[in-house]
Image (cartoon, rainbow, N blue to C red; front, side):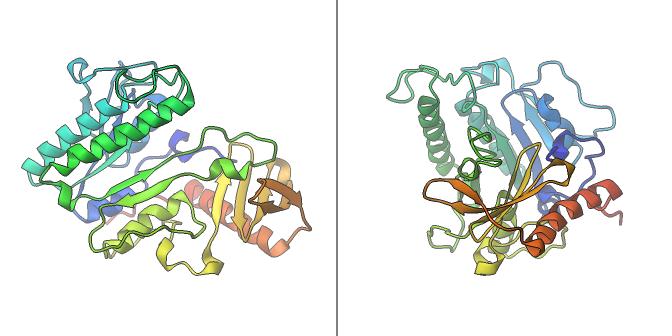
Length: 314
């Protein structure tokens, strides 16, 4: 049930956040430090209007994908492991491409996927005060260093003042745990930085990844039509707060510290969630919550299966 659309067939020509940027006149680019053939990412991004900038290793795009692909050349790489180039190198490529776009007066939306925070947890020496030792804690510090270095270099560029940075994790280290869905392992960091005319604030609302860009679009005062499931976080009422969590076997709907879990063969479980010890304790089924939880996932699947996520032809 949790199979990503990125990995499925018929996943091109969809309405995505990239289409909203296109409507606003932005060029869209996908940066990846390895070969985007991995997890079918180049097909998904290239087939949905993004240019590809990756460390191509011989895997070609399907002939029906009409996009531009740039390779990250050897002389642009200072450190590389099995996953791809280090975070500093991918950020250097991003800055180089941003400079070119700015010179041509092209607004750009760059979607960057980094790789350093993955096994084998290796990174360049001399960047942080911890020696490379293949420990997750060490590479997290390197990841943090690389982001800070990227921001400081970007600040010196003429395009910085008009550029918003959205920094977000795709997932935590482990999705498996003692419980059917280990809730704390789905709690990810996310921030929006350099947003004009917006005071610094910590957002406490319960929300999901899918809400980040609708929140950004609202902050930018963009007017657009979409079939996105996400909502503006800052305008959420308490009863609107919810989060979607899941893996390839189970799908979850979290609200009011209660978790509905939808499993294979129509098995359903309902829990009270304790944030203090990350425990789940079974509670009686609430059929209204069950219907609402199911409706989100079934509606998304129905739209995918019937072409409802496709771009509408003019």
